[in-house]
Image (cartoon, rainbow, N blue to C red; front, side, top):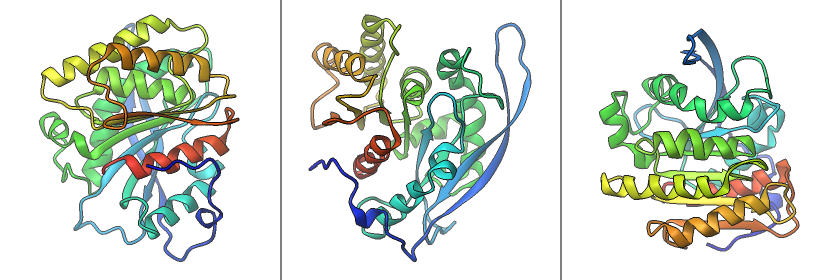
Length: 282
């Protein structure tokens, strides 16, 4: 596809074909090895204009970054909703459901944030996905058995920014590859103190093992800005992964979108989402 580096003005214009954003509450737990504690958590759910329960919709789980929560994409930056509304209205992407959860546990705690980016995989699999897809009209069609969620993985995507990008790798790709076939890591992979070689190996091993199990990768769409604090580690890891992993094929199921001069900010992340939605589910 042809990438652009500034959000078109028409994507930010008011439209009468507006989707809705509603609150969704669900039960989970901490799943800690030293004892699990019950959690009552919230997420936001975007439903496209004309949402019809008689139709089936693809679904994107979209994560925030560090220091904020599920309010980030839709409530703190409501123009994200306007962008999505306009993209759907103009036929740039298919109508889809978008869920913005939080990997935090009710309190934003950066002391355990990196731990949670990976540990969230159990909540994602056991609680969030089944609760969401039992209520909303996705390709799971109300059957949230593990067997059916695996069967419908090609209609499910996960993306996130910054620590949410790390969550995309760790919670969605490494641990729940059988539930997702579309990935959008925006701004980073392992963080400044991470083991880059280990991340390359995890990416490679996950994709090769998935292929053996008959679980193909539809697309991994990595994004960053070349002035982003997370760019250098992210691009290095993915360039090595492409060289070492035979599953990743440039322009077929993988690309790395770089914004010239792009930094670690919402302007870049909305542009990443704008492009990702034109790739996912096609």
